[in-house]
Image 1 (tube, rainbow, N blue to C red):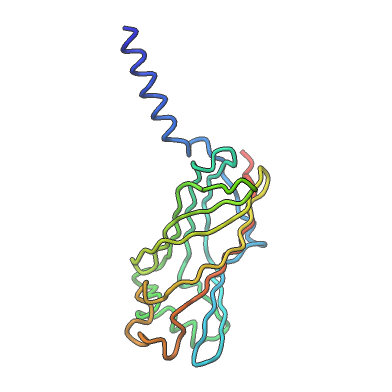
Image 2: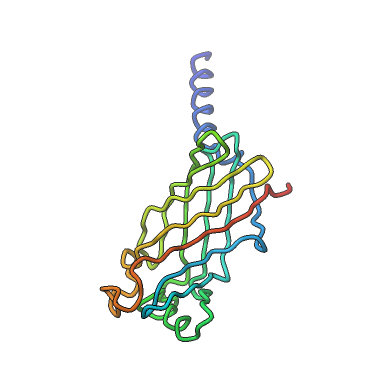
Length: 188
């Protein structure tokens, strides 16, 4: 009987340790202080844009960063550059193809601390069913998390503009994406 109890205790401990996300804290994003923007060059002229609609589900405990879970969902049709031609082109089949792929997703499990309040999320970004690894840094304390990170994406890795501009003659092949995010633990 004692052996059965000990076996069950070990199994329960292992299960609870692997389910660390059950105790991670939910964080709410301050949308007024947060943005996901992008930039590039079209026909020699720089442009900037922003995703107007996105959500972030964040579970994070600074005391157990390895249990972090982050899911950011971006509505690709919400890409806004201030230029109607660019906005329409981005929604088209050769770019975001919003009819078939209405969302882009960033997913990360676990954060790596550097010992000074900074963390690294090694996740994956999926656009148009193409997934690439992406690393994002952020700072966090018990009361606030902030990210101000820029990741340079290779648009052809996602099949974007592969038919109309595969050489980057018109639109830059590298697209910097900047994530500015402020989040605080959610009230329970």
